[in-house]
Amino acid sequence: MRIAVVGARGQLGAAIVHEFGAAGNDVIPFGHQALDVTNDDAVEKAIEQARPDAIINCAAYNEVDAAEDHPVDALNLNAFAVRTLARAAERAGATFVHFGSDFVFDGNTTTPYIEDAVPSPLSTYGASKMLGEWFALDAPRSYILRVESLFGRAPGGGPPKGSVAGILKGLQSGSAPRVFEDRTVSPTYIIDAAVATRRLLETSAPSGLYHCVSTGVCTWLEFGVELARLLGLEPKLTPVKVADVTLKARRPQYCALSNAKLRQAGVDMPTWQNALARYVREIIAERSPAAATPLQPRQSA
Image 1 (cartoon, rainbow, N blue to C red):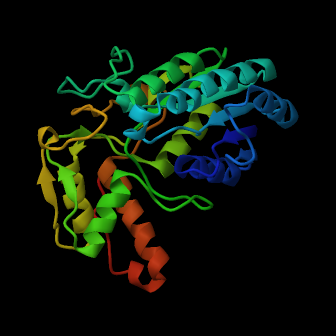
Image 2 (cartoon, rainbow, N blue to C red):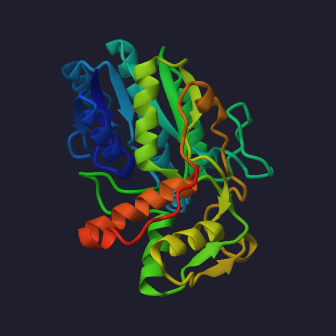
């Protein structure tokens, strides 16, 4: 397949480029400097020249709190640029893949959200991502894959970022990072998300909305304790409650997602414990290949 990857230098984009390239596909990566997705004419010209079989959009405005002060920027990148890419995919006869977010929900539940759950975003960021999902459906054949709490690093990508990177840095420095003890998530390993994306396209699974997260749920405190254990470090963490932290943008307190629909399509996502163990193994191997041997992270089915 010929694959155009937009936002190719980001955390998830780099994983997508690597996964599809390693599988023998012809990948055309578009970083931010190469393609401004908010420029309709530039997008149309780039896609016409690329002639892709599929367009995978990994570009996004991910500054949740900043979006409250810069709503136009969030909407331009997370919603209107998605509409432009979806229309470009339609003109090119290409499949369109777009990544959504758990932030489209309000978190007022106690069980993992399924795809049919009604969105009710609490923030500007969440609203912009919800609109982006709707616009992605403009493409005759599209996949909207909701991911959350992304972690990991792929070849060619930038340094790790996000909540997991912050917890990792804090544990390694001994600074006792703050973690929510009452916020429940389904963390997503970017490597597994990239594999799932490729398999959906290769198997021609039914188009539509899917949750693409690691299997299982955990609080950020549980995640941090497991990360410390795998690293062989003392779990020096500072538990906090959502109600005790003031943030500009509200977060859904329970935002775990069910990936049962993805499983029914033939794509099984490993557990978050399994994914985290593989991530830690990568971290240790990168620092010192010799040091990777003694650590044998517990594997979880």
